[in-house]
Amino acid sequence: MKRKQTILIVDDEMLARTGIRYMTDWESKGFRIIGEAADGQEALRIARRERPDIIITDVKMPGMDGIELTRLLRNELPQSAIYVISGFDDFRNVREAFLLGASDFLLKSELRADTLPDLLRSHFREQVGPTRSSSAQFLLLSRLEREDTDAGILLSSFQEAGVSFSQGLPYWLILGKDLPVPSDLISHLCSQVDEMEKTVAAVTPAGELCVLTQSDSSNIIHLFLQQQTEAFDSKDPESSQNLFFSCSEPFLNLSQLRSVYQKVQELSQYRFYLPELRFLTTSDVGNETVYFQRDNFLAFLAHRRFREAQELSMEYLSRCRLCCSPEPYVLKKNMEEQFILAIQALETIHVPQDQLSHCKLNLLRAIDFSETLDMLKDAAENGWNQILALYVAYTDARANESLNLVQTYITAHCCEDIHLSDVAEKCFINYNYLSTLFGQTLGISFSHYLQKTRIEHAKKMLEENPSLSLAHISASVGFPDQSYFTKQFRRYEHCTPTQYVKRLQSRR
Image 1 (spheres, rainbow, N blue to C red):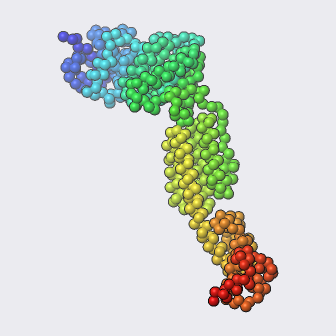
Image 2 (cartoon, rainbow, N blue to C red):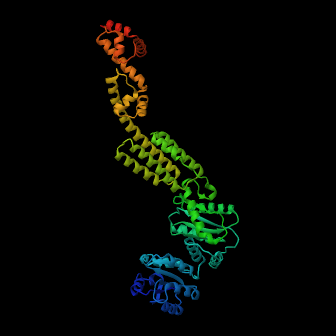
Image 3 (cartoon, rainbow, N blue to C red):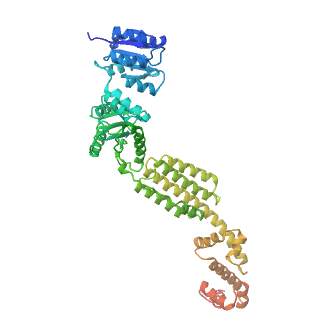
């Protein structure tokens, strides 16, 4: 009969110990409870006597706690698997337990009858001892959290954990983002990486695959990145589509580990510009600063030249793509500011506030959700189309309203000596806007429109009283003399006033 693996339960709370003992039918699952202890001292005595295969111990206990118990048992009972449990997700205790050689760190809230026996069975080894994988991995993770001032001590710690780093050989830090979901795949690859010389891998609390390795050749690092990408692809092609790696510059001092980790995290952001790359290095990212022509942009908006503002905005995005700069967060903030300024420009011409609020909300949401530069470009193009549509719709309606007012005024006062400035003042319209309105809407200048209106007035006078003299008519409709009136009449009607009267008489 196969020998059952023996378990010692250590917890200062009786209910916790009882809960684990009666959680499941341990005997039927190949385990046997050989004892319980309420503190570290009692557990140490039982463990020395019974030499259990598995020890499940709480972290916080009066007297000797679980961390100290782990340290002592690790030296005395190297073949025992030690599982540290806690009611709190305390990274300091997690790190310390693993550095001392614990097999795993478990939360009490996650202890379940249907999973705990399998977990103990899968983690148990005939020769446990302080494993290279667990201690080296958590040594790496702990140094990502804080700077170390003594690289020599850190190097020695890694060597004691079984990682044969060499002094003077360049280090490289590699970060894998968007890891495929299956945890067994990640664990498998971590163990593969761990078997490599001068290399340790661990998964960070953020779910990143972090690899610290040594090599004197960047080509070897690139080959490693390619191999890891292919390994994930071969295991789970669908889940690994978004996986990519970012790699640091080589560095010589392990005390720089945390700062290098932060830089590699920042480097990972630049996949925003280069989503097609599966691994990213600093050489892929430019150092050039891309400036936005903000003053010109504001000038365009001030004169309501939204198309020119749009061209400036999209040209800025194109330069950002070429230089892979600035940081994606900064770029998004710059684009948000551009659209906020454009919307404020629309407010000055009294575009309805509800339409502007809806436009602003959609724009800012689309920018924020953009995961790549292409997505941001699409969001920007759609945003500018919305702004131009609002501007055109509002200015068309406003233009029609203004034009009707101006045409009514000119028709009533065309016989007077009026100028564009007079009409603008009487109709409360900006002079430059009114000048542009004639050209863009009617296709003629103000002076031509005025002359044409005067000719129409003259034609009406001739139709009502053909016997009127041309001198009287020309003076009545605002022309300085009969000769100039005749010249303008021929220009618009392609005949003289006299010929026009004869045509009217011939039709009667």
